[in-house]
Length: 222
Image (cartoon, rainbow, N blue to C red; front, top):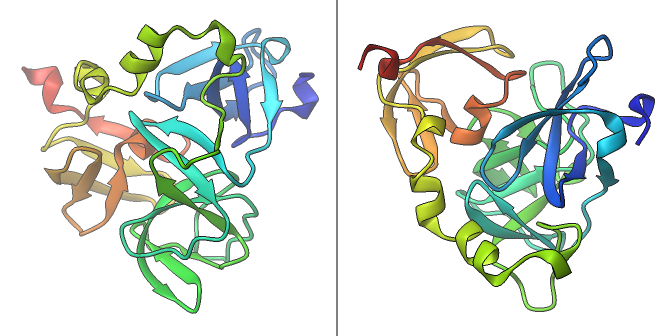
């Protein structure tokens, strides 16, 4: 890709694996900042080293250690994840291209997410859990070079459990850059953080530097 073609939120392939652009900084030699979808590992690279991909219905990919399939015909339920593909946020909502959010409630196809964003039915597709029959695997650009061992490792829950440095902890304090609120994590599930003011976010959101900034980490005092 050319640098002028790169936009925040785009899905791209880098070193044969699916990534997402989280920022573009033209003044730097490695001007494209990515995170790898399967485990949220951050990468700095150049536009010439990535390949653009637009997600489609029935595409299947790994997101934070779990497999999902895009299903444009599925109706969302509370607890489902959605992929925002045509963002048109209202003034009080904060989301952008290819953001992944968890559904809190649904009304007439429009959803309110656990981050209190109202997302219209025309803006998103549902991420169905698992790999649907006949789906197109986009976790890898060239699947022929991926070994069975790598596939098993990538889709093993143990793979995420081993990445302790990626995990926020109860007691950590974050600044929500979009809502300008500072809050402490008071509880954790396997892939969600629950803040003291009741907001629930996916762990991957806490690693997105455009959404959250670390104020204090418990691990720094251990």
